[in-house]
Length: 68
Image 1: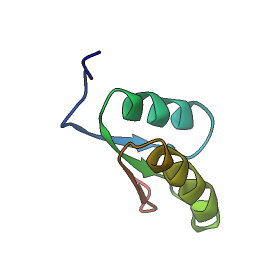
Image 2 (image 1 turned 45 degrees about the vertical axis):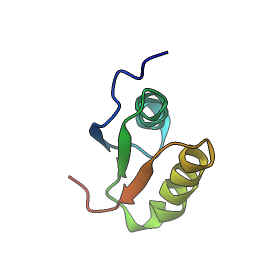
Image 3 (image 1 turned 120 degrees about the horizontal axis):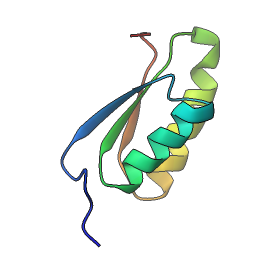
């Protein structure tokens, strides 16, 4: 199956929980390098867990706590 987003970068704001986490996982599954963005320092652990989950599945992801 061809990955629709292979070679693309997706920045997902609010990407560490709820709908944003689902979008992050879906984009990663389609081949995108996902940047999980969130605005709160206290959510760092949540963002780290999601990025680890995506990377463990053999996909690309990183975390950005800057709050776009």
